[in-house]
Image 1 (cartoon, rainbow, N blue to C red):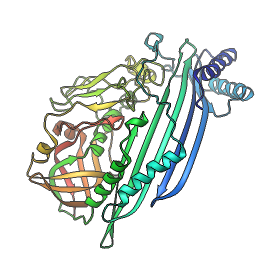
Image 2: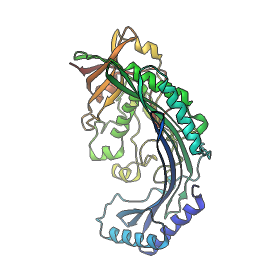
Image 3: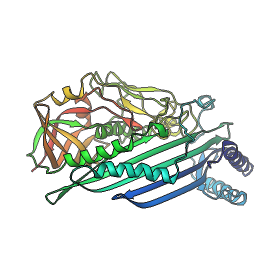
Image 4: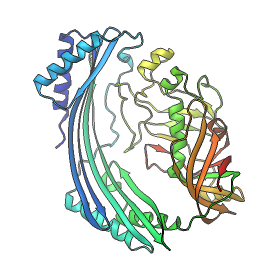
Length: 438
């Protein structure tokens, strides 16, 4: 069973009281309890079953502008006392940093919003196994499928965040996820692909038969890939890949990167960085959202932000420390974004495929080839050649290159946005990327 709020609050309050008695001027504490159970299948046979139960505390003590942190999974009273003594001693010997502080009391969340993030349903091991059997059977029944691997994971967690300014609050969350990796084989050649579903509530998970069939279908489509010549071409990113564009944006507009001067978007606030028809939001208040939260990692109330408005950058992602450095108020983004997404585009998926006579449709990228300082982008990729809106054949062993300063300005969005992740994007067309092939 997940520990209840009163138990976690008791530990947090004790840590704050002991820290203050030992000389801390300010204290922040987080206490987390999580239980995760997973079952793995391989080739329709049980491969592994695991359960983890993690209970831990993280304590940050301040002595004026000095700060240090310590954490432990041993919550016995004597150990907590030793932890705090060590943390205080370390704090005393840490150099002062004028930007260290607790968050502004006026910005702290007063309550927890009801965002429907917790489902108390427990899936027995037998029912997890039954679910995976259905996924495996569905995938294995498809032509050319040589190998399958599936997973079902259930996670429940509860936490308390507290500080010496009187803030103490937290809430429960749950996650249910199921995935399938399918390997297809034909004429000695093999390809792999996957499908998954991840939800806050069990009842919202995709059907197991759908997960298995989709994984097999995607793996089979990749069989017999061909190479193409190097060229400059329009590139369409599948929704699984297009969300990476938003990951780059979030990293580039983090207050830390801006304060350090390590972002290609430094000094771009209120500047047009996307084309005028692009709007991007970060919304922590989505019902059942995978990134939804009432407050950030410092306890500051989270509100919906329109980060990009008609192509213009309106906000950085600001926490307390870097907000102090930049002389900006925190906007509740300690720890990054919540539910980050493009506003839907104005063209259909099929219209996007037909927007140019010839383009590449990318389903997988390899590597993390982004230089955040310059915006340069280069990754390996696989996908499909599309001509006149029709998929012609799989393509492999290519490299895509460009620069995000230009990529952001040349994005066309389809209208097929779905919320499957905490970062979500519709299918995206980017004009004029360089593709290196054979």
